[in-house]
Image (tube, rainbow, N blue to C red; front, side, top):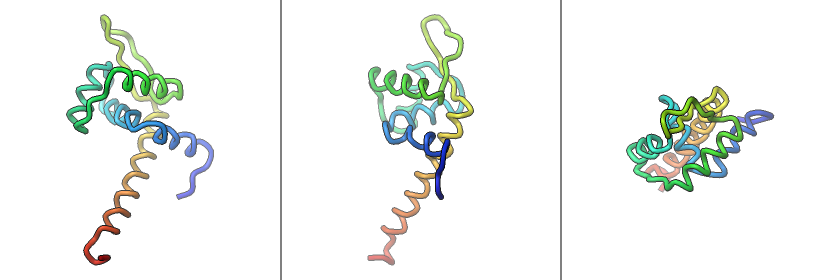
Length: 112
């Protein structure tokens, strides 16, 4: 699949950080603040993001328009996935699925 224009820009977020992908996946099922994302990602991927990693990735995703803040709750600052972020996530997951299929084929017993 050839990517042009916006698709190339959207696919780029995955190159700078796995935490960005995990954050987008976490926000795909609803708004969350930082701590809730950290807990969700830990349960989902068995990876615990430190605050610097988490908030650095959040800042990059927000600057690219892939996530946006929603109204603050007390001291918590929740974020939501934007339409652009959902598109970027779909594109990245499609790419990852294709790579995983190719890897499984190459590992199949018939090729050894």
